[in-house]
Length: 459
Image (cartoon, rainbow, N blue to C red; front, side, top):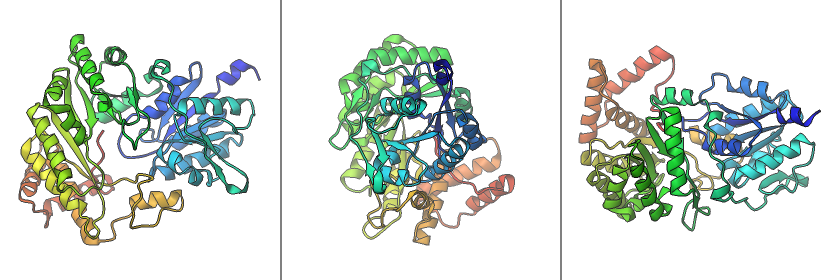
């Protein structure tokens, strides 16, 4: 087989089914680094038949890469990997993402996964691809965890990302952007200009220079006629000097392109109101405040969240505070504390969004009251399982519904406007029982679609 024909074999990257429609920036980074390769990204959240498409693409492929987080997506990742392997026995399957990094032994134990990427994926995956194309073993490739003899797992040190100067610009042509824009209801693009977190418990943090970010964002805005850019970064505020330079660079461009970014409450307190006003002047329209999942918001933690809200209100910035809540246990009622803080934020600024959501699963931060999940199916089942306390489960469902409805657009039909008004009144009064309107809305949705209505994740 000629080298040119080998090069035209597709490199298939798969995003498993999950909540939300955030663009798969991790896969995009891996695909963008493989210049000259025929890369195809399949998103299981948007494709009507993702398994069939992956199978068709991988019949002639050498390598399939997936990004997996703990929880429900693991089940889809296993199913798609098995189908692809059945269609092409010589296919190498490589998993990356949070679960592959923290629990590689569970992924490799399925017998479907040849290797797990435990660090930055650009270098490791491309070397795995080259080894697969030429029939070589994956042993010795930096950053790849492998299954060894005796069912032991060899986990090497994680590979650090390439330095910013060597990072390729994201090749957004690999994604079907119009599909994302359609689902999102607007031409809103995800962008990442930094990696890691600048703290002792995070990875080494680095970021692209502000002038490069400004130039890339401006070029993307023109090419794709963007309405907004969403900076999807773990630690946008890792360097306040860079934040200021980026804001001034966007101001100097004069585009007034709306943009949004995430921050933890304590970061907003350090940034201060003057800096937040500078961000607003440069085009920032909304801050996604990253409230610690499952935390009981009382005392200092409650004060930080409310003070962060006050800073955003004073800077004339909208805010979205997502509260991921977990089952109450003795001395720990996260649902009640999150609901109380969410109500206070809504009273502070009508533009603030405060959705309540069931907590996702985050390795290695496992539930201390339960045994660690033994395998991938157990991880998926944990995220889907109702809370042990049925009364608490009902409280959760009521609050998710009413907080979601209260912050939806009013709608055109009288019934929609009535439900929104009732939801806002219930939140103001703190009364969520006897939800006749909730039952009516859920029954109507079931009759129309045949499925139970659930509040979705919004990116």
